Amino acid sequence: MRLMWMFSLLLSLFISSHALADWQRFSALSDKVGNNTPHKDNLNLSLPLVADDGSAVSLKVAFTGNLPEGEYISRIWILADKNPNPDVIDFELSSAIPRIELTTRIRLGESQTVYALAQSNQGNFWLTQQDVRVTVSGCLMANDDTQAETTMNQPRVALPRNPKAGEAAELRTMINHPMETGFREDGQGGFVPQQLVESLEVFHSNNPVMTVNFHTGTSANPFVAFFLDQFDNLSFTWTDQKGQQVTEER
Amino acid sequence: MFEIFDDHLQAVLWIGFILGIAYGAAAQWSRFCLYRGLVNHWQNGDSVKLHAFMLAMAVALLCSQLLQIFSPIDLTQTHYHQRSPSWPLIIGGGVLFGYGMHLANACGARSIVLLGTGNLRALLVLLVLGVTAYMTMSGLLAPYRLDLEGLTQSRLAVTSIDGLLSATGLAQLQATVLAVLFLSGSLSFIALKSKALRNSPRDLMGSVIIGCLVALGWWITGVLGADDFDPVRLASLTFVAPVGETLQYSMLSTGMPLSFAIVTVLGILVGSFIRAIFSGEFSWQAYESPKQMQRGIIGAALMGVGGVLSLGCTLGQGISGFSTLAISSLAALLGILMGARFALWIEKH
Image (cartoon, helix red, strand yellow):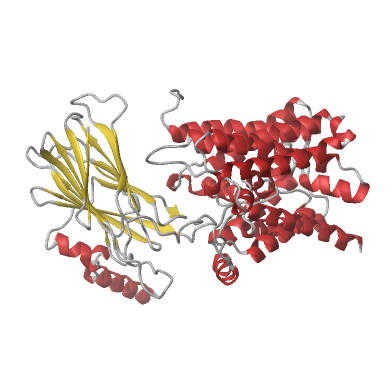
């Protein structure tokens, strides 16, 4: 009996020392991290535990650590390991972002782990993950077989209620677009062709503040909320796969 | 307009909670119940409660459609207007619900009200109903539901009664007005013709208030909940899935948001409790025999399964769904009536 215990203890030690962490087996992630060891603290991901509508799961990613002078978070990727394409959304950030707290809506094809990976301009990595259970939807998908227009329309930007320069506050952006993944069947044996909004670029007085790259894992009508502390001379440009652009200025 | 609230979601939740309290108090006071109405009508020829339900349908239809005309709300965006419904499931679900309602002696909404007055039978009914509803919606029974739905779906060109009318060449607005005048008019005519209802201010007022509250529900989610970025899903009072959602929320609240459906369920409980305490009608009640309890459990399970298949309960489809002029609501209501009638017939023979 005692031998058994010791044996199983040894076995489990052996396994844990040789097994790769989950994320290392997920190539979309490990390719980005390379040989670096990501930190596991300070990066927070919040998602619902259970989502009954996998086509729009709200996601918030925040970085709470204090970085030394000159270092800032320059990239954040959101990846989902069991989506047909693991890329969900990624952010290219500049040092003009006063607070890293980004909100968006994502698509999850089934229950899986969602990863957030952040990289600083000095090459440090942070990694966090959360499991989401996606259930089949209730009786509420009334109109999902309609063919929506695949052009961008109704761009909207909401500034904070009482914006003050120098004080970080959240602003929200959204544009109407079906974000066709190319994975959806058209009912005649083929697939609805892929048609995505590719990016949102935010400028302040012509200096790039942030670029958001949307992928198949981003929900229809891409929504992004983020923090800024300057609210004048802002411009927001969405670009779709056909190369068309829509710009809003504030 | 509502500066006291942080955002539109908070406004929807608070006002929705107040709506629930109002419904709970009104329904406890007037003993609003389709099932009681049907039993009294078929067994004793006493139609007051049934007429009260019809009046509530008429008022809800009128107010909701007025709201639709004078606000940006589009009631065809609700889940009662399925593009590809499955008629066998909607009607069959209604029959199961109606039968279950007989076994459990009350429908979902009525059970919440009863629980507020200290009726522990209703607690068991609600627990079973909530769990079986979620089993059918997203749990163990969901794959079978989806398979059946896939086999029996049929595609609709129009989903609403006024849509049918306008297909004959009428303008949309004319068709809506015509449908509302005819349905609301005939329902309230039948209801108000009854002297017993006219002489019972409780039933009369109760049903008018409940009809208005349904329209208020659309206003809360559709107008207060409107937002360019994050609109609230259009909904009003309904009590199968929300009971399940409330149970789920009690277990998973750290990982799921509070919703309009949950606050209305809680509000009804509170409203009914307050009204029962103040009127001295609060009293603890429980099953007297295992036999009764078995009936309650089976009835609640049938209501949970049936209510999800038919997309709503007596209140959800019968009043809220009906007020959107959805064709599927008429089918579900028909199923519920057939189920209840069948259950009474079985018991007699």
